[in-house]
Length: 386
Image 1 (cartoon, rainbow, N blue to C red):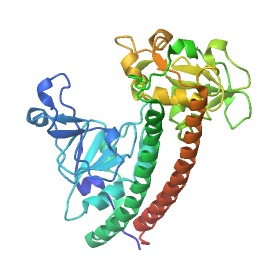
Image 2 (cartoon, rainbow, N blue to C red):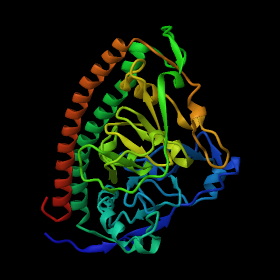
Image 3 (cartoon, rainbow, N blue to C red):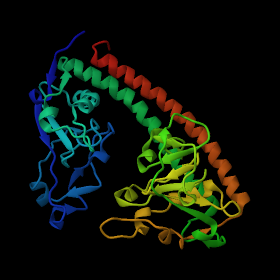
Image 4 (tube, helix red, strand yellow):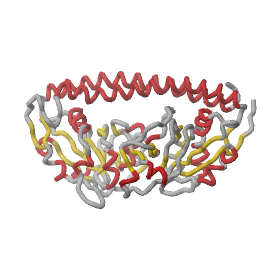
């Protein structure tokens, strides 16, 4: 069955979000109208809260999206979508559509807009940050079946998505167990209620400071050698926990100070990336670029999994220095106190995490299955085959 395709601007009001002055404290409060940013999109659950809220005065200085408006990121994470569960305000990275309810059922509009990302990426000019302006976005088209059919499609996709969301919650719960097991075995890493022997981090770990990367070749899974690691490589899907790939590769090591071994914990050390609090364990030796730092456990003191868990409790931004540009240096981390249980107990912790990882892997496989079902249903729904 074939349905007409209609551009968004003919199906409702398209608006771009706005940010009231962040320097005016009267605009911002602990409660009020949720101020939505792209980080709060990507979930099919209607958005009714956000990290920041606008007061009545702040709300009056912004464009307010009504309940059931579909929110689409048009700068950065192109095509990331959400749906308003109450009145909200969004920042400028988000366009929102208040669909004509006589023509578009909001949940259907949400799922239809969720399929626009490939078109948006194709239309966006080649710039450092992907941007699709409101004019181009408004002209994007979605298929428009009759309203009753839209409701039927949305109901089917809602059920399929609920299964996918349950799988995601299970994985998130399993991930949180990593810290729970640590606390059970070793206690709080700051207050040290179990009275473990303590040491300065510099005494039980080695530090690696990134430097200019040498020339390399494209990484295509080569054995041996060294990954040429950049901050952007930490965002690769396959590097979500353990770094096993990068864009580039070298057969030869870099400088001794900048070449980190397997088991080192790596993280951003300069600029806004510090605030992302990303920490990864190296699964392969790597040469670090100037924006990365590495800390490797000394074998006679720390186990890598223990050190990684200890780092998971550490907020990097809280110990960074510098005013205009945040920075992390060895002197910021070296004096930090870390408790040092027996290596035997640390290894037991590592074995428990290995068992947990197997369970997570099984849950991830189940999530892949649910995602495949959802994707298949989406394809069939929007091609008139459902």
